[in-house]
Image (cartoon, rainbow, N blue to C red; front, side):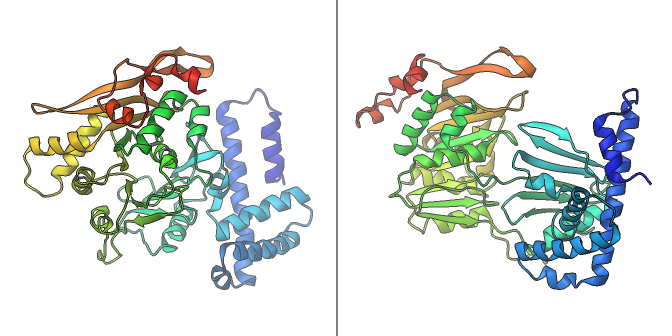
Length: 456
């Protein structure tokens, strides 16, 4: 019988150059299916020989080591004629199946992959460098996907079933997980994992990647040190949390920082940091702790800085109040399509607070609380860039006024679809420039066309 590994080698070597794309895809599915069958065979044998419930009580490293030793013994007995490399590959896949995330475990462990998406058992995608690719790995069936989802949710005391068909969860490393099952997704269970980076980007890394220019980075660093309130906006996956984390490196060590998140993702470099995380309701629907609850408690914790990972709802009211009553230097993010749209989103969230406030009063709060909006976007080539830095200048009539300090000028499309462009200063001087002059900082050095050369 042709083994899985022989099939895979033939496909990789392209021994049939005249084969159609459909035939090649079919070969890959067949090879993946045979691999799953071998993994299942070893898994069943392990269940008969070993107490996997006892293994589940061990920590992650001990469990992997125990299952690996058992799987190696079983594989050696069942497949004595397989090569060493093939046996080790099979052992690794069995370990992933028993104590990991099954077929997608290797994708989740790959540091170059930022997101893993399971659309159905035979359709798995991943994102690398901002571009989505289809994976060759597959699940056996919908029950196989459900087993992995249950393993993730049970570890944190959550559940997903017909009465609660959608769930947000988190892996042990902090990666965000969303799962949805029928009837809300008729095709079958859907699993999305957004990876958590252990090596947080610093501002120098973002400059090297072209996310912003050195002059803009220096300007923002000065604004953080001078305790301006900064709102980072952008769409899903545009890099808001990463950018917020990078901005936080400019907060002085002597200050007490309280972070509010749902879920916790920020990794600040400072020592004096209190991290607070919202809690979803229990299985019975009780004991929920919202970001708004955390914000109210935070104000009693003597914070020098308050950092909200992402403002999503009624907590926007407390945030505006805090920024206007002495908690300068606060940072947060919001989902929005532009800097102007970010202000509208904040306004709508304040309306959700339940207070009967006139629109003008809300806009006065927003106009006086926020100083800068930094808008990010994921461009067509997959890169994440700062595309707009705008100053909030106040309120005129019923409109919150703002002026752009920097905007991204697109200059064309380069090789392999790369977007060419640079952040350019608009030539406008921010109204808070006098505040900086009192400490000997001239903002003109950041806002001129030649500023980047001076800060490189």
